[in-house]
Amino acid sequence: MSAILARLVNPVVWRIPGHGARKLFEFSLAEHGSMLDLKAAARLTPSADRRAAYVRHLLDETRHAQMFALRSAELRKRAGLESLGFPNADTEALFEKLGEVGFLAFVHRGESRGRQQFETYRDWFARQGDDRSRALFEAILQDEKQHESYTWELLVELTGGESAARAELRKAVLWEAWRTWRRAGRFLAEKLYFVLMLVLYAMLAPFRLMAAVMRPAKPGWSLPSAEGQVDAGERPALPAPSRTNA
Ligand SMILES: [Fe+2]
Ligand SMILES: [Fe+2]
Image (cartoon, rainbow, N blue to C red; front, side, top):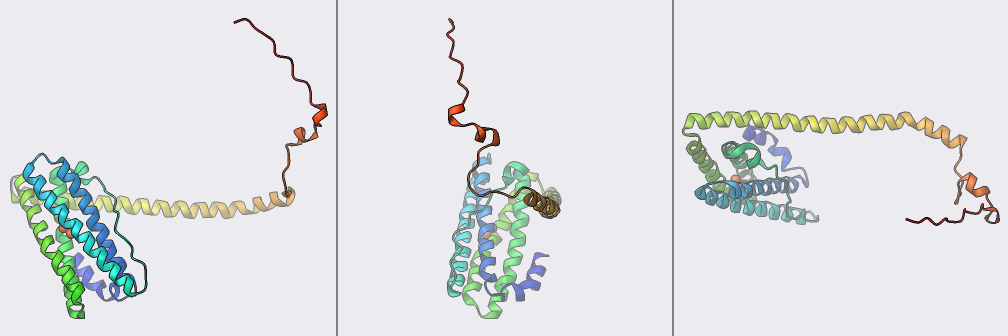
């Protein structure tokens, strides 16, 4: 699905001036996000072998983030633009949320999707004669294939068989759909709040105008009316303090 989508949008995505560099930077951000999730996995897994695998994986993702950010900066420099810098992604605490099996299913699906998408981009740049971008995707693809296969092996090992592993992948599909739905809901709620506030603001504008006409603002400082009328010489004397024995 992601490969088909990538194939369809390729002619547009990479040809809009400035868009290619931003797209590469988005990849860099995604790689950095994966690295943070794997860092948590390496810290929390009870298995020394899996910790080693997660550390290897996170080092790959760190390198991918750098490679994408660098290529993005090259393209922006060529267009006379500032680099977007190094990505700084957020973490969703996926390992803590999903547990190790759920996390592996989620990562495996992500790796598989990424591999298909990157294959499409590699082929696109090869056809366009952009050897530098083709080589970038080709190099990253070697790692992504390995990530896809080792996460599957671990998933099978932890669930006890291929059919149980496939059931976990189906659960991951449902969880991702739920997450997308919630994100879309949050996005719509934010937009709706903005529109409602705008309408409220427009509705209150005539009242603000009426208030301005009825009580025009005076320039300069002013004291509250009661205080302003009391002359310094006429201030009432304060009662003398009385002593009390405690
Ligand atoms: Fe990667
Ligand atoms: Fe990966």
